[in-house]
Image (cartoon, rainbow, N blue to C red; front, side, top):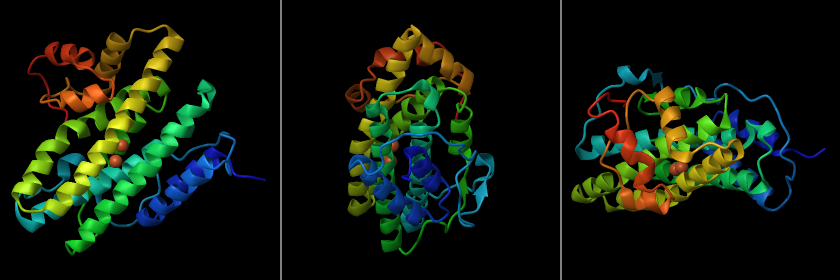
Length: 273
Ligand SMILES: [Fe+2]
Ligand SMILES: [Fe+2]
């Protein structure tokens, strides 16, 4: 009896230790690529992935202010990014198998399994860098906001794609270049190089989100831009916040036509951080 992709995803989601989860993810992705796992299957998925006792998770508004400068600031930054990547591993597995009724094509599953493997690599790179700086993932508190807001879209693949890759991951594209510059200004070229590698790979994740979002729109006869805006209105607390990394977004197939109206539509309102 061979394992299905749904079983594999569930196994990864339920793995407690983050490093173990990352290595398991990379191995399961290999098994899918090599045809050792062939069927997508279906299973009941957990509402939340297994997490270790540390880091302590706090509500987003209870998170201590991160110091920006110095070694402490850099560790805080890398820790926060490692936490995002850990969540991203689980989110990719979840997208890959949560919506079997949509009968998505094989390349959809290939794409999200590859995203999971990329996120696993990103987590491992950041955690290695943390250890070089004398820290490790789990040392600092983290928040559950990303997982919680992602699960609000568990009811529909279209909503999930609209929000998780096309908003949250796209926001990562915007945030990274200034962070890279700040790290270089602080003399931390090693961390900056890691962030550059991650940023380059994240373009493909946003692109996959956009591609399958559009496929779903086509299937349902929905227009891309206004449907996206309606879903963002439902799931986000305010408009999208500039500045945007137009170039990286363009590379991901999300030209300004996608977001310019949603920024202008609700000028100056809200702050969804
Ligand atoms: Fe990532
Ligand atoms: Fe990603």
